[in-house]
Length: 217
Image (cartoon, rainbow, N blue to C red):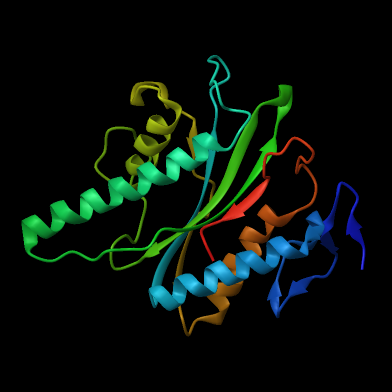
């Protein structure tokens, strides 16, 4: 079993599938511990919500403004705290309007990578109750949809105006997955997609800042 050269606690994975699910082998080696946590979080999300909406999103830092703690994961922590609060607020508004509204856990998987000029960025997968959210909506700032909850949460995390957020919340192509507990093919497609977050390359070690994480498991 080959260990990660920069972190001996991590095992490198070179296979084409993990626990019976496809991975992005072309980015091998992947990190086995990251694959294990990703699989656990995705399965747990489906236990919490039999119908789950999962999607990919990237969070970027501005290139023309200095964010004081961009070299830590504190902005990401603030993002998730803000997102949970905004989702709960939206649920309460729906409940007040209609008398009932579905709640949701906010399960997530993320990795931190260092891009050009030493500027970090995040790749995320977020899993929500599909009875509460089933799409992101139009990717236009100012709309009342899930995409804008992401924008507002990252805006709050960076302590920047929403008007300055253009391009900082990026939604990749084929970003969304409708998962159910009995649809193995859809789950396989999602796991294959997010296995990219588990690649060993581009992860940074040695500065005390985690390069990978998930919601609590």
